[in-house]
Length: 147
Image (tube, rainbow, N blue to C red; front, side):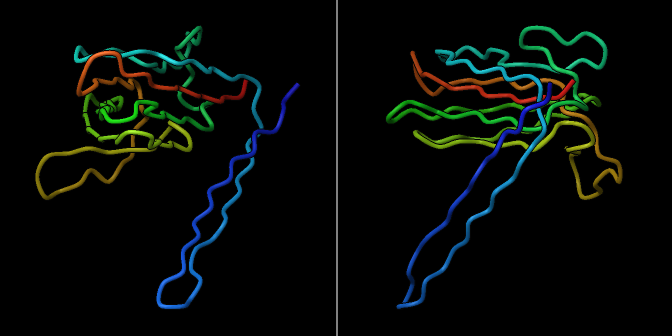
């Protein structure tokens, strides 16, 4: 039976006497949650991957992933996330201490190309890896998917 995952992002700031920001709430119909704290070091590890026909453990069906969050739980070290799509293209993202990286879905989500011309098509995320700037860096991985 599907359950509802609710996520909320709130920005709130006053600049020059004016209140700015917003609250955005999203809901997702999900059947499965993968939640884990992984301690990583300077050697790259795979946090999770996708496969269209063999989802199990930390392997998900790319078109069924609804929400994913990776949070750097360390107080000072950074984490570099490497995302690979189904064309073998890669992109790197740095997550500073205490910050999170959020993906809303994985199917037809990204295109990473070298040079000025960007591929018109978007591709599925297939692998998410991480490397820390130092040893013993805890990272929380939260992935929600449907059946």
